[in-house]
Amino acid sequence: MAREQWGTKLGFMLAAMGSAVGLGNIWRFSFVAGNNGGGAFLILYLLFVLLIGVPLLLTEVSIGRKAESDVVGSFQKLAPKTPWFLTGFFGIASAFLILGFYAVVAGWAIFYFWNYINGSFFTSPEVGYDGAFGQFISHSWHPIAWTALFMILTIVIVLSGVKKGIEAANKIFMPLLAIILLGLAAFSLSLDGASEGLKFLFQPDWTAFSNPSIYIAALGQAFFSLSLGMGAMLTYGSYLKKENKLPSATLGIGIMDTFFAVISGVVIFPAVFAFGIDPSSGPPLVFITLPSIFEQMPFGGIIGLVFFFALILASLSSSVSILEVPTAYFMRAFGWTRFATSVLVGSIMFVLGIGVSLGFGLWSGVTPIGDLNILDSMDYIASNILLPLGGLSMALLVGWYFKKSEALEATDMKNGLIGNVWFTIVKFIAPVMIIVIFLNQIGVISL
Image 1 (spheres, rainbow, N blue to C red):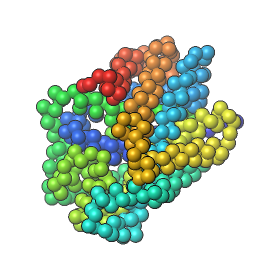
Image 2 (image 1 turned 180 degrees about the horizontal axis):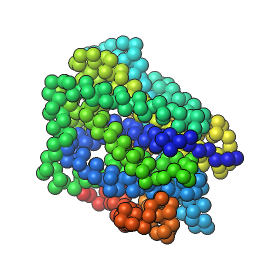
Image 3 (image 1 turned 180 degrees about the vertical axis):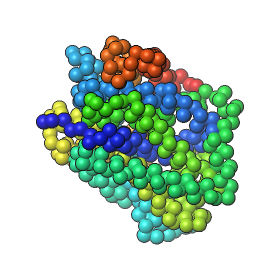
Image 4 (image 1 turned 30 degrees about the horizontal axis):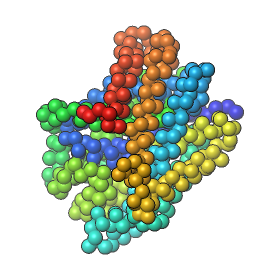
């Protein structure tokens, strides 16, 4: 069977942007930036995206395009008769874990969106948004139903194929998401007191640079917001035609991913400061803090509806890339059809999502790792262990297993200044950085 390919280079770039732009940019970026001082964090985040993120993105995409295979098959093809292919299973495992909890959070966003549509958003104001959110996520089956809806949407896009499903969907999702976020940012900037939010985001507190933890937070956010290490970008790269040049494409993806993260900050922080909310509210910022702000705004119902629609679009564009990672592997390894594979794999992820959802209600006492609930435990394993190991293995393959000339050829680079800088980053700097993140996250070292 002939391998599927993207229709256009732009289609690939939009799909890759869609993979990168998700809850990590809108939900995670906002609270991580809020917890780490805003402006100082933003400077380091931008620096790490450019110096580490984009070179690793180029590395991952080049492996996929060179091998024209999935995350396991690529290692088997490029490093035959070695155990290197086993690292591909880090990506497969992380995809199951990540979409298992990602779909639950995205289901919450669909629930919020629906409540803004029907005008009945939390009709019991005496419990507050905190209480209403707690009641919803702890319900035995309501959140599971919304998770199921999100997974069905994801599966339908993936089973439609690379060109007619993933590429076609992202050609709609990404421009629409950009327009929505720009519109929301313009509205947020019109609020009284918005300038304080801009100052927080763009005017760094220089004393914050003396805190080592801000560097780890910024590096981690740059790494994870670009969807590195799971094999999504490798898989997407495998559908690229050989004539498509990689350096310009990956730089464009890195820039646009950063644009979405910064714009989401411009949407959120001016509103947060305009209504006197603590910017370091943490993960509840989107689901508890923002709805209370929308309630106080003029046209708040419309703003809430549009914001959560944007969150759904961002979530879907990422979830299809996550589902595609194991789908591509099982299709090749077992010769299954795309339809059967995506339905089966998506259904397994949904079952994992049921466990995650029950972890806020019936199974709230279940703490697989320390005192972490089911969602946080799955996130910990995927984000702190599997993704860094996956990213490290790709950097080591290109930097140490490939010859330098082979690595440069795979990435369409010449043996000049830029090519040499990229190879040095991938061979020496990126592995050290990833190891530092990994050791810090699992508590071996504390920075």
